[in-house]
Image 1 (spheres, each protein chain N blue to C red):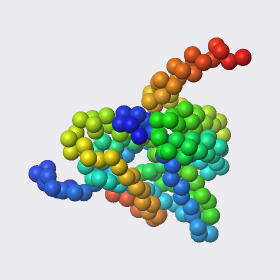
Image 2 (image 1 turned 90 degrees about the vertical axis):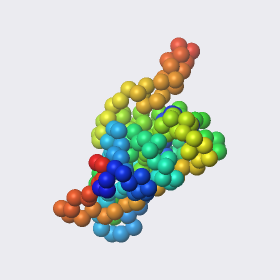
Image 3 (image 1 turned 30 degrees about the horizontal axis):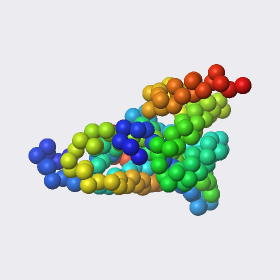
Length: 96
Length: 101
């Protein structure tokens, strides 16, 4: 790599992901969740914030897979879904 | 997306050949200066992935834009950040030099 004095260097340095790589979902086990998420995005004009519930559902699907772990189990609050979890637990008593 | 909020995006890859392919991908962020604010929590990149003949898979990326993005005056005019991936075929026994990894 060039010296630190090279401020005009335009080379991009890729960084690896914080939690590593997603194994490929070869059997499409979570494709249904992905489709629901994509449908939500299309309807909301691609507003990511509007579809966080479905994004969370997709990641939960990945974590739930017993056959092939598609994602390491991680508490959803740590993945930026803290506010949605709280909503879920508030909702539960009303569901009959 | 809102800086600081985690977001999910999907890419799709297909192996149109009749042989399995082992690939590895790397990414690029445009504009260049926005790259430092782009944080990947988890993605399909940096590791070899195998695609069987004719296989098509969804490739997810779970990320967020660093909230400091809104404080940076250089980013004031940036309202579009483009993330692109390039897949390379992994050659047997070859170690890809990944800067900073």
